[in-house]
Each structure stands twice: as C-alpha cells, then as structure tokens.
Length: 493
Image (cartoon, rainbow, N blue to C red):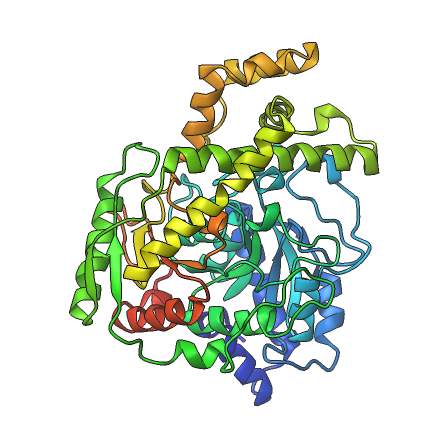
C-alpha cells in the first residue's frame, strides 16, 4: 500500500480493509515502517524499534477489532515481554520486561501489531518530551517546537502519519497535552476504567491512566472499548461501563449540553491570547450547535491543588528512583538532576503532611462534582500557551549545576524549599495548568484540535466530564469533528 492511501484511513478503516482482505497486515506494517524511516530522523518519535517482532506477528493469523493495524507503544509502563521499557532514563537501558502489561495484552488481543516504542521524558515527569537518554522529540508541524509530553513521541508519530493511533498515558495531562500540541484527539479515561496491572494496582495514586492519541474520535472510542470493556480480576476497581459500546455511543447525537468555560489559569499565571482565542472559538461553535455555553469554573484553589499534586508526584518520583536502584544497581548519575531533586524534595515532606495532601484530593473532587451538578462539561484551554520551543523549559545550567553539587553534598533539603526551586517547578507547570484537575479528581477529560495559531501550530481545547462522562465527551467530540474536519490536516514534513 502506498503511503498516500495509507494516510487516508484511520485505524478502524485499516482494520476494515484487512477484514475484507483488500490489504494484508504485512503490507500495512511495511508501509508504516517505511513512513517511520522517512520521518523519525527529524522527529525522534520512536526510540526503540521492534521490526522483526512485528514482522513475525503480522505473518500470523490475527483476530480482534484492530487485526493487522500497525501500532506503537509508549516507552513508559506499557511493557512488552522481552523488550526493554526505557522510561526515558539512562538507568533502564537494556533491561527487558519480563511480561506484558495488561494494556499491552489487551492491545495484542485486539489484533494490533506493535513495531516500536515511543519517546517520553524521564518517568513522564514533564509536559515536554526531552530526555538525557533519548534526546528531544519534535513537533511535525514545526520541528523547532515540542510535541508536548509525556506522550510526545506517540503524538508526533500519529501526527506525522506513521500510525493512525498510538499508545499514550496521562498522569498530569500527558495524553491531552501532546494531543493539543500535535492536532490530535486525546482522551484521558476516568479513574479505574483502564487496568494498570499486573505490576501495579493503579498508577500515581490513581491519578494516571493509559490510553491513546489518535486522529479520529471513532478510533479513540473503539480503543476505549478494547481497554475498558472487561475488568482486571486482580485490579482494585470494578468500573461501571455502559451496556452499549463506546464506539456506538460516540456516534450518537448528544443532547443539548450546559457547558461552563474559563480561560483563567488556576495558578494565576498568564494565559496566551491564542489559548483564549481557542476557547472562545470553541464556545462560539458549541453555541451554533445548540449547546448552552457560559463563563463558569469550579470553586477550587488551583495553587493548593498544584501543590498537593506535586507532593504526590515528587513522592512517586522518589519511589521510582529508589526501586530502579534497588532492582538494577543503577547509580545516581544515571538519573536526571531534575528528577533527583524532585525525589529529594519528597524526603523533606513528613508522612502526615503527605497524607494530608492526599486527603485534600477529596475536597477538589467534591468541588468539581458540585460544578457538574450545574454543567455537563467544563471547557478550558488544554495549554496556557502555544507549544513551547525545544529546550525552552530546560532547567537553567546554573540551577542544574547547583542542584548537582547540592545532591553530592546531601544538602538538597533546604534547596528544594528555596524560591529558585519553587520558581522552576512553577515554570514547568505554568504552560499546562489546566490538566491536573482531571487527574486529581479521576474524571475523564479530552483535548480536541479546534484551533490553530497564527504560526499554524495546533492548540487544543479541553473538556472535563463528570463521573462516567466518557460517552458525553465522545458524542460531543464526534459532533465537533463533523464541523471541523481535523483528521484531514497533515504537516508538510
């Protein structure tokens, strides 16, 4: 199959061609790998190829709703037995996974053909995809800019036409942020829908979940059916799923919705005029479609939420580093300074203070639930500004060198309480202040590519749903997709 024809189809469409025997899985795979060869040198999206594994799989008899469709796995948590999961860190190079993660097993059962692993920042801790281990991934729409993070490699590959859909995950916006940067659909499912096993009960105290980035809503919906339709017997939740498939629900016309919108950063930091314009454009479009849209936002202290989010995030980073050091014998120098400082900051927090921060999540969740008593959805920018330039959010050299010295001298406790450190943490959150709310509260949220900047960069908007709100999000997304045919847009690589 020629690339031009391949690019016209989404994953559901490619699966239909395979089912009709109009194309073989092997042909699709070779087309996808050829496209990857053409663009990956510029994008740095795929950091670990699995070509021979994929060729052997494509030669077998495949079944499932996505039988024969090429696919990419995010190089974080999405373990494939016998293949290293690098997690964006030098400390895990060459350490192969011993078994499939549950989401990978479900993707394989659906007939997908993974042929590579995509770039992520170290441990997925940033909203950009730049790491010391694998370098910077770049946005297909402008190579000087980030594809977002932490699922930036997957988003870059999908936007560039390597695959129509790819594995992603979201602990603080890591599906929605790259979707917004690259002009894609990015749904973070609600807590408990997608299994985290077998090595974890849940990720990031329930704040994180696996999912996908895609070009079309129907691919996202069909993938949610693959990941969420059956429970994980060893998992902590028996999630309620609708009796009708998400794919079918996504195709239904939504009722008249009440949607509250805001463009105010919950951190009180600036919001770029393009991000404001993105929401205003979306609000206008929603009004034309018959929905009630008005300014509104939940009654939540965004700075307190961010602080409590970072308390959990830094503790998880400390645990991750300690576990890798214990299991592999990795040295401190194999981890990035930023994450070592995050881990050090966690060690200055008393256990009771960590427990209190975690307990406050309930208040944020209740406040968002009160908002959803009045409004079906919350509309915000996904990003507070257009995609940043490569290297723009890198830790300043002097701060990095100072941090390295303090780590060696074991004097990081006082440093992580300084204004310089707190300003650096805020600088990394300021471009993405809107996404953590859905992670803390466990609510579903989706970024849709409804806006492009004056420089022709994508800039998505975010919709946050209530408990079990995935069908509403998907149905509205389908309605908006019909008005705004974003899947046809292709970067001129």
